[in-house]
Length: 606
Image (cartoon, rainbow, N blue to C red; front, side, top):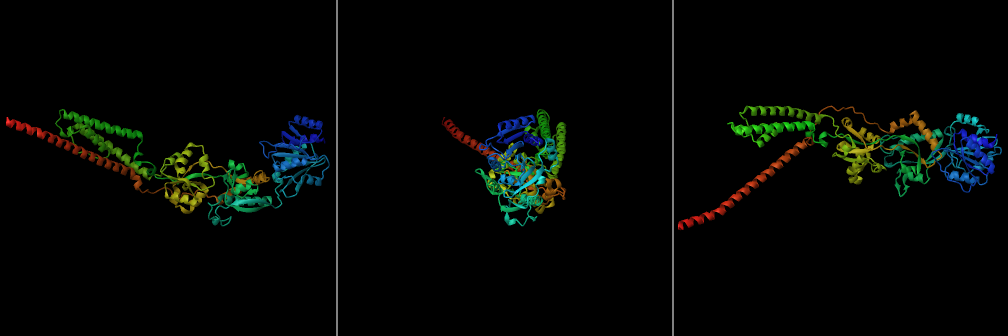
């Protein structure tokens, strides 16, 4: 079979459209390759200078075909560059050609230092046979699998259709050790990977550890595991903790799950998501009286306006009756109905207070009776609604804006990115809450799960926390009635958590495929339910009566206090006005007395 025709058929059968060829052929042979490639819909880029290699990025937005003639001088430069840039992966389909009969010794010598790890797609094609090539680790020998003789495009397409994927073919890693690390942030509480007493501490490592142990058994590799106490934060462009060790290339795999964040993507990769987290504000719904004045809630604004209109109309009509009485009716009580007295009657009627006035005028009596009767109906409805508001389950806080303007204190779970998600949020409501409630507290706003949930239990405190961690503490410490009163408000959407691997790791796709298989068959969900608590069930219900405390009648006490202060102020003003009036009169009498005496003496002398 023509070798050029085979090359074109090989890559076209893999549905590739761009070919980068490292060749030292004659110009006419290169031209023929490019001509046949164009005819088959394959763009060919030939590079004859191996000492000036272009960039070989590990990942592109598309798959790319790579061709190398191993018999060319300096072909080792291409292999070295591809190994150092991790270009031997599933995103690049490599075909290494050798126009001589297959020789395994020559293959091993040529690829002796090439870093073709299990996620590589490298095919060695001799004149008589094709073989699949990879190694389980950089210090392990090559694994060579025969694919049969070189063949036509149709035969190649049938081969790829029946050939298992690379992930399925390469599930035996020969018990190699992979350098890895896990997170134990509080070693004093760590009692083993199967201890369920403190599930809220280091939850991600405890969920991920059994999943990766199953991967180790499935793929036949072992862990060279060490312990670190930090996930890693970025400082001056570098990370510390687990992320920093992977950034420096000291680790291949992290036995934990961590948030998928852009800053971490720059220094490491993730192979598969594990669990979904919800970090909501958790709090006990406060009574209506704690966040609003219950004495203005029973009626809508329209009812309050109607009530004010009725009282004003009654006062005006009574003042009119008093005016008519003073013009010709001998009714002393009716004549006392001045505008101020009528206004006092209207206010007293609304407050269920009577009046000492009992006019004989029939029209005034009917008006006063109707006003008192309307006030009775209004007061009965008002009192019943107040009782209903105080006894009904509260729904006072429903949104982040409600939390922001409520008297509740706020706290945030102590995590690596405790400030970042608030600071990075573009939601103006979230930003307002952060600046008004959290930023002024400084470090006092960040609490452990146990301390934060304990403050939630005491009331008037909202705690932003990972739900699974909070539920574990709540199920152990809260009463059934307290569990029923819990409310959640979403602050922002947390990113998924996933298993981290070294950047451009050769095991990323292999591990990712097996972890996704665990999710599909339910193993991942099983461990999630073991280590991540669900919301406690409310078995006590919300029945019974709620005791009325001082906070419920505090607005009324404020009105009483304001009225007492206003009365005292008016009394003081009255006393001052009375004293000023008496002083003015005394000065006037004293000033007029000498004038009168002089006039008398003058009259006597005359």
